[in-house]
Amino acid sequence: MANYKTCKSCGAPLSGDDIAIYRKLVFRGAEEFLCIGCLAEHFCCPREEIEKRIRWYRESGQCTLFR
Image (cartoon, rainbow, N blue to C red; front, top):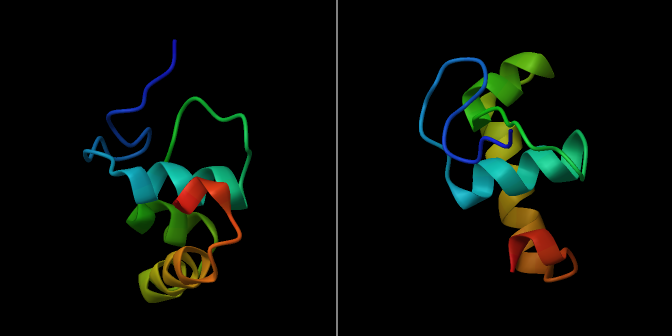
């Protein structure tokens, strides 16, 4: 069953950005998601890098996940 409300790792509430960046970077058809913090841990990068990518996708206007 799809879980669009909480992170599958830590249980934190998810925002639209959490879901969109997970779908963009991991799997477009995902039904379970990681929050930005857990996603950064998964990719072994700082949280700020994930947030930077979210801003870039939103400002570019080219990705429908961030409209």
